[in-house]
Amino acid sequence: MNNPTQKISVLEKIGYSLGDLAANLIFQTLMTFLAFFYTDVYKIPPATASFIIFFGGMFGAFFNPIMGIIADRTNTRWGKFRPWILWTAVPFGAMAILAFSTPDFSPSGKVAYAFITYLLLVVVYSANNLPYASLSGVITGNMRERNSLSSYRFVAVTIAQLIVQSFLLPLALILGDGDKTRGFENTMILFSAVGVVFFIITFLTTKERIIPKPEQKSTIKEDLKDLVKNKPWIVMLIVTVFVFITLSLKGGMYVYYFDHYLSHEHLAAFLGKIGLNNTDAATSGFSLFNGAGIVMTLVGIAISKPLADRYGKRDVFGTSLFISALCLLMFYFYSPQAIVPVYATQMLHGFFYGVSTPLLWAMIADIADYSEWKNSRRATAIIFSAMIFGLKAGLSIGGALVAGVLASCGYNEQLAIQSAETLNGIKLSMSIYPTLTFFVSVACLFFYKINKKTEITIQEELAARRKEDN
Image 1 (cartoon, one colour):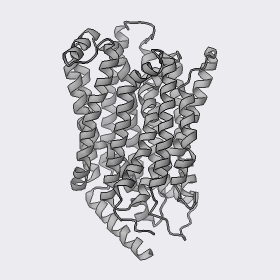
Image 2 (tube, one colour):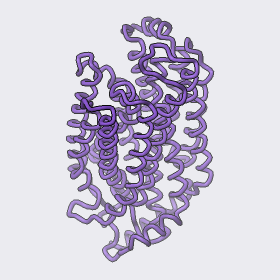
Image 3 (tube, one colour):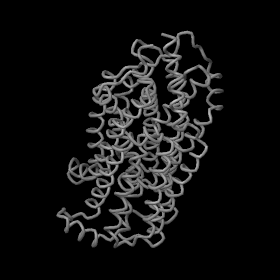
Image 4 (cartoon, rainbow, N blue to C red):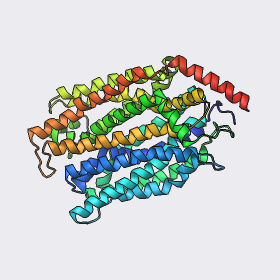
């Protein structure tokens, strides 16, 4: 093995992080705008959109363990995981463009097209993002360096989040000359082109250093047996599902919250006071809301590593997630006129969620080490399949819930003023529902036993084993 615990250069950290920026230009669009795109742009009924998002996404989720098995058994001169980032770069970009295109089909043709393109997109996403995530577990075995790598990565993720959540709608209007249909397609062409370039940079600038011993030969059955016996993996699988249900549910409902719940009159007055263009108060207010939260997320990410180094990932992750959930709960108590409290609460939520953001992925890398420590066999990608499965399942369930809640409470995209039942459903999806799902994630962490002391023990014992093997 080639110095698995050595320090990583800043160039490699930046190069690695660009891969997640590329993926998140698409992922954040799916999480924030997919339900809106289907219901308000492509004009698919909300209940049908809910079906597409759920079943298409769940198919992609169940593809992840298969992809994990394939990636762990990939052997090339470039490593196990880096080649997949290169091989899937162009297909990923192409499928993103197709998924947000709007061909003029019949109603049933639209549904079929949306389902097929979304299904293919999430499958290609798995083939790209599972190896990408697994790569973080083999770049270094040094847990402090891994925390640092994760922080770099999530600065890039947050930049992608800022671009998508704050600028996608204005960008779509600009690139479509006021036509959202054409604007979405042109925006995805731009995002996809940038993403392909960034994926190639990630491939060229990274290196796999933790290499399984040549004599290690495990069967699929042995890998799966190790997996189901790995209690931290099971805990983080559940945590990930509920975290991404929360993110997808609240993220997908934001645009409806600004379009239909908040008072446009009060929102325009607020924007005017701070010197912003308020000709389209909902779009401008939505962009500012996301931007303010994301800036605070970056602040939270900046202090995440030193906190995790001192107190351990689990405790910092759980505490910050709990406080961010309480911030979401506050949205339930705000009237449509309470513009300033809405923005202040979003900024607090962004800060505390930002502290937790890098730690989720770093904890999964620790679980890969835990499995090797316990079983003397390393199967990185199948461990990371928990994260991507949970991400896909959460995205599918949360996105389907957005469309499902809208359908159940009588949302009609053609109405300028929605019913009281619809407005209440939107408010609940911004507050009570995501608070409960975040609380489930926090509760699960009481069963996650890799604390600060265990992290150090695993790192030291694995480092000693790898030194003996060299």
